[in-house]
Image (cartoon, rainbow, N blue to C red; front, side, top):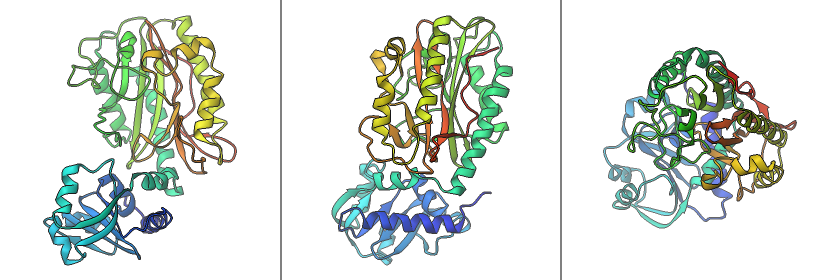
Length: 395
């Protein structure tokens, strides 16, 4: 099993201490409860809580599994607990001014902690951690590059052989999942967004990808039922002439890349769809060239969207009625990370940030077209790690 190197853990925890000290708040305690964030700092993700105290003390309290935490984490101070009350043997009951992941921690969990500990003030920890996780280390980039290589192989090499006339979207999803896991996919796609559920990705045949969904993205998906809107339909079957839209993440040892490929099944794609798709490829290339340290995400978004052709602008990122308000997003342990190429994101890009660029368009009645690739921010512009965008692939 791949374990988080000790130097990574030590560096990340120190960076969090530094970010807390630079926050402008006179803080006393920081509580990390989200399990993916716990893994980022400690190398293990258990039912527990990572507590940082001003001055340098970091303690991981674990309810389950303490044994596994000891095996996986290099943190010096790991302690077993049965309830939050047990932390009183180590911590003062007065936590003072406290940082906590307010966007991720349920109110009920916070109330359980406050049964045993007092907090003078509660500050959001989310943005500080998001800022740290946005810049990837060499260790992280190596894992993401491997994910990207395997990701490209799935979409270019394997999917064309999976598509069979008469198969349902649900059958295609099962075959796609099997192929992904066969190439080392971690079997799970992780999002930080509240109640965001995606089994394999956003995909579908023809007009199915125009169906509105609660997922914050340009593609659509009718799904299996109102209760399972992100699982392939058992009723929509693949027909000659269909466009097939496949937008999926690939995870390798926790780190994910994002990529999209559009296929034309047993026929040439419609000219309108081809025009929109090819312009999306051009938009992606122009955007990637701007992924340089110091450039501002919101300014990139404004500049790129201002020079779209009228035809693309009308159909861009889901069309007028459900347009996704971004053209790219950070990615790593979660698919949806910082930074985001959208209005309101004004912190400059930095070397080592990784973003998925996904200019897409709806092309009624044919379906959704466009591209998505994952890029690393460099001095020379975005470096693609998922193989590069391709035209609509005819099968």
